[in-house]
Amino acid sequence: MDVVALSRLQFGLTAMYHFLFVPLTLGLSIILAIMESVYVTTGRTIWRDMVKFWGLLFGINFAMGVATGITMEFQFGTNWAYYAHYVGDIFGAPLAIEGLMAFFLEATFIGLFFFGWERLSRVQHLFVTCMVALGSNLSALWILIANGWMQNPVGAYFNLDTMRMEVTDFAAVVLNPVAQAKFVHTVSAGYVTGAMFVLSISALYLLRGRHRPLALRSMAVAVSFGLASAASVVVLGDESGYTAGENQKMKIAAIEAMWETEPAPASFTVVGLPDQATHQTRYAVRVPFVLGLIATRSIDGEVPGIKDLVMDAQRRIRSGMQAYAAMGVLRADKVNAEARAAFDAHVADLGYALLLKRYTPAVTEATDAQIAAAAWDTVPPVAPLFWSFRIMVGLGFYFIALFGAMFWLSSKRQLDRFPALLRLCLWSLPLPWIAAELGWYVAEGGRQPWTIDGVLPTFLSASTLPVENVWLSLGGFVLLYSALAVVEIYLMVRTIRQGPAGIPEKAPSGLPPSHIPHPAE
Image (cartoon, rainbow, N blue to C red; front, side, top):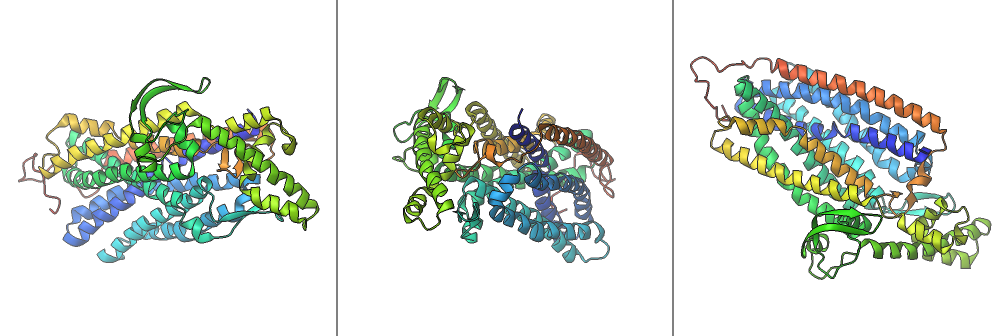
């Protein structure tokens, strides 16, 4: 494996490991605010004890998220130095704001959350909890603004004098429709994760006959919040797909394994076996019109297939070659009007010309075969994207069904009457993380071969490092993160086994074991 492949593997592993903690942080922070609001409203101490118990689990997860997230930002300088140089003026701004606005907000108020129970009034502590939740969501917002710009680079231009991308409209970067769609979809997935976590642990307590007062109340909150969140994930996922269809047509075509452009509206492939070698999808089961309606929200909008998009990539590569040639002239003669006009006319395709550097250092002298090969490089791995997307969507509808069933039982005050369903809730605990990781892979894997879509190829973004150095750091990360995973699981399991302080394991005397309290009790 070369430096680029190893650097991608290292960043992918650290990013996906870090993303194990992010969704739970997002979801639990909102659930804590909901539970504490009930405590402030009713004054019942059991709700305060619930906030303390789930807050302790939140704190363990939050600490692990911080520890694993910091290393990712350092990798932009160590493993992706040219990327940091080329787009650092744009990409670095949201990350800096995230640190100054969101991380410090979280770090400040999370201390008050744990140590302020006896020093703050109920309303003041509720404000602290809400600030922790706000900080968590603001952190996700600014990170996804940075990531959204990588998917849809707006509000920036290539400065010929500095040979870097620079900001022209920061508001456009912040209000990037891809970033906003990714934010609401991602945080909703985090809310589902938090709700499933609370639901699963509460189901475990009910199955073992422990801490029923906490389990029943927690489950009532989780199923209501989880149902709303799971439904919003599907709706907002549709919006995210629509923005990708507008700005990343190759990603949509690869997700659907759609090799040929179909007459509008295009059909949706439910299942099939994509074969990237032969450019066809075997045993495909299709539903007419659905993809066209989802991707274009119309009956006459065309969804281009992979082969047509590859032909368009060839056109853009040839256009970018003209920009690359004009850039060479302007570097020697900045006042050359003809070269300036040619560069301005074709600079939007300059990134496509850079794809040729994989095949030849003389970009302007590339052969037809090299141009064709570079154009086919714009096709990401189809089969992994195809199946990752379908498993993710299937899990999304499963969450709606599970939370819906539990919500109905909650309304009937029968949450603990069906042990088999409680076991299903417990076994469903890892599924939101699987869905979130698959969604992250679809978003990032579908962007390849670009670090910045249409602007900077991934293979040009990496640092010039000895392969041995990357292997060494990769091995170190695997060992460190494995140790952190063991610590995380140990602390979580120990805390769950100990249960909440102040809440009896058995029903209070005078109440039957089957008593189900109203959430306001």
